Structures are given as structure tokens and as C-alpha cells.
Length: 244
Image 1: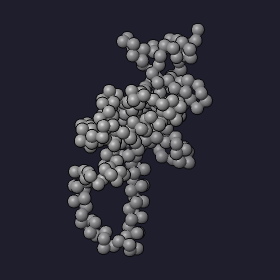
Image 2: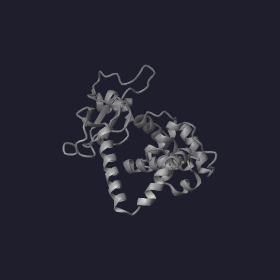
Image 3: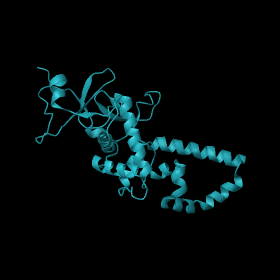
Image 4: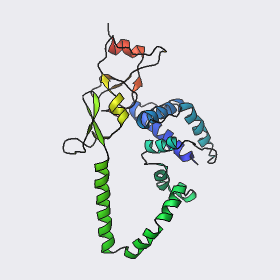
């Protein structure tokens, strides 16, 4: 059922890493990258080992066997691939749409049956065109007014209004409360406590557009380059952040 979803997620992660590093990743590293991204971008916890099990099942071409039970994992993987949700994923994949009509789609089609009848009457008419343009305009205006946005300023994300004259489109990102609260850039020094008592990293690092290493308080993507941040290590601390 979810075979294509898993295979495409692994393909995307593998291509993204090869474009960034020029190195082909193992399935293990691909699954870790996907797992980290699901958590950082969508607050979805799904282990890399579980991803590898699903990937191995998907490669066997057994569609019925590849089933993801958690809806949040399904939708997060769809968003990772650039879709709004699983319905959007199915709608944009003809082979899936032919064999799968989702319950949500059946209910939606039933509710909108009367509307389809009206639309058939006015199809190809000037009224239909005018109504369509008006409706689309209202939807776009409503969506942008309702959606919250944020941009990266200095060392943190701040909430802003959607303003393409003040900000470049690439700077504007969809508002995420956890990014606002917990994602910050810090100035590294030898006094920073880089690890928990159990040895787990408390910070993540990555290069800025100028090639300089920077440290952040949460995992995720570098706010300027979009590349995945890596957990801090003693080697990086000694070489770049705490040079004695």
C-alpha cells in the first residue's frame, strides 16, 4: 500500500546527499537522514531501523506487505516528498490513483456530487470562468492571510508578515513554533557544555554560505543553506570551536 512512498523517500534522500557531498550513501545513512528530517521538520518520530525494514520490504515488490500504520508518519513522508498529504500523493501518481480510492476521497466525492452537477451546466460558459477566477482569488488571499510566516534574523527565527517587497521569497518560511522557541545559533567557546551526561550531543553544526562552521541548539536544516545539520563531535569542537 505504501511501497511507492517509501521507495521515493529513499530515492530523494539519496539524491539530496549526493548533490551535497558527491558521495553515494548506504541505506543505513539514507534512513538516518530521513528519520532526522521527519523529526526536525515535522516533529514526527520514526526510527531509521523501521525505515530500513520498510525499504527492504518495498524492494521485494510486495505492495500488500508495506503498510505504515501511523498516519503522522505517512503524511510526514508525503510532505518530505513535496506533497500536502497522502491524498495529494495518490492524486499525483496515476498508477496509485487507478488502484486506490481513499475513503476520504469517496466521502468527498459523495458530498460534492451536487456541486459537480451544477458545474456541468455552466461548464465552458463565461459564468463558470468568472466564478472560477473569483473563487481562486479568494482562496489565495485567504490562505496567505491565515498562514503564519517566519524569517531567519541574525541568530534566530522571528515571526513576520508575508511581505515580498521586504523579504525575498526564499527567506520566508512557514511558521513553526518549535523553530521559534528552540532553534538558535550560539557563539561557540570552550566553556559551552556540548554534551549531556550520557554523552549525547546537545548542539548541531553546519557551514554557512561563506563556508564558516556555525553551531545551533537543535537538529534540522541550516537556515541559510538548507543543508542538514550534524551532531557536534569532540573532533569538531577541538578543531574549530575550542582551539587552544
